[in-house]
Every structure is written in structure tokens, then in C-alpha cells.
Length: 246
Image (cartoon, rainbow, N blue to C red):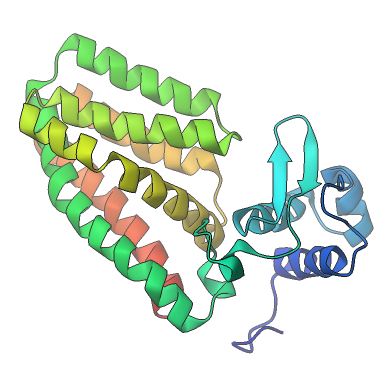
């Protein structure tokens, strides 16, 4: 059981057991963990459960998952406790700590809701064929980099900036560019929280972006704004239904 008296999900007890082994020195810093397949057999669960557990520990800054290279112990101390500001699962934080993280996210989401829904609508009206080609390139890049969080995050932010560029309004482009650094941090948190709250894969986020692209490509300003609005509203729901409200 956890601190809100609900039964632990399979990935949560696996995560906690691995974390305990790391803290007890069974898995030392720099050590390579057994493969997903071996851990699945060891714990008697599916590989997807193991991946969720490892993803949770990675988001806490405790593991380094290298694409095709294995999983290594990065730190036995969660970055949530060391104040480094890495992506966090709200269920692992004390309420006051999560509140500190949630408020800046709420503010940025409010800005995104106002700015990006308008950008999507205007892009649907003003976009050129070269704009659509660039947006499609960003989508393809997101698909190619599934499983590589850093590269996928870069493509994600690039997609949103390309929508602003497709408005052909330099002020909107400048506003999105000025938000770029904060947007990177927000994307990092949002992706971690979306993963934990929905147990979904990166493909789900890809589909969200593809729907926005399709509306822009169709020249449907109302649909483009609506798709962006629903995307941001879903992110907001995930963060605050599962974090700020405990």
C-alpha cells in the first residue's frame, strides 16, 4: 500500500523494489541492470510493467536508459529530493513540493492555451506548402525518435514553433521563440506526467500532434484550434487531476 491507502499497481511495487535494491547497494551507481526480459521473469510481470517501473526511476533521475545499450544506475538519490528540477511523478512528491512544481506549469499552460490555439487557427489559414512540409518533417522526426526522450522532446518543441512560424506573423513567432526554454522544461514535465497518469506510450502524443497537423493541412482553422485546445486541456487534466489535487 502507498501513502493514500490504495493498492500499489504492479509497476509501482517493482519500481520500489528496484529502488530499494539501489539504496541498499545491490545495484551500485554505474551498474547495469538486468535486461527488461530478465526483470520481467524475475518479478513475474509483463515487460510493459518493467518498462513503466524503469521509466519512473528514470524520471526521478535515478536511471540512465540508453537506447539499445541497456539501463544503468545513475543515482541512488532521487532528484526530487536534491532539487535538480527533473521531471517528476506527482504521486511520489509531498503535496507542498508538487504545488511548487505545479504552479509554474499551470501558468505556462495558460499562456500556451491562449497563444497556441490562436497560432494553430492562423496557421491553418496562412500556411504554405513549405510550412506543411516542415510540420510533416517534425512529425516524422518525432516518430523516428520514439524511445529517445531528448531527441523526441526537441522535435516536439520544434513542431510547436513551426506552427507559430506557419502563421507568417513575426510577432507570434517571436513570442514562441521567447518561450522556447520554458517550453522545453514544460515538455519534459508534461511527458513524464502524461506517461504516469495515463500509462500511455509516446505514440499517443504523436497521434495528438498528427491530428493538429491534419487540421492545419486541411485549412480548417476551427478544427486546428480545437485540436490544440483539447491537447492542452488534456495535459492540464493529467497534471492537475493527478498532481495538485493529490
